[in-house]
Length: 69
Image (cartoon, rainbow, N blue to C red; front, side):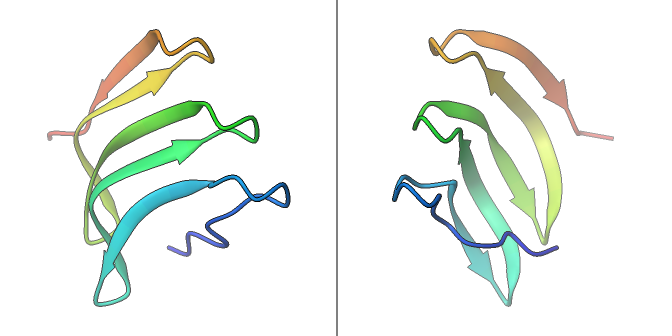
């Protein structure tokens, strides 16, 4: 899985997170072009794990998705 460029053309971050051995690992955040937080959760070797939260532009929680299976 390739995360692509970490920044939008306007200079704001698309995502923040860490890679380990070339794979997405640990806590990640994904942002909209306006800088608002869109989604956050954990990866384990490129796999979404645990509970991921999706946010509205105003910061309120839209939904939580459980990837524990």
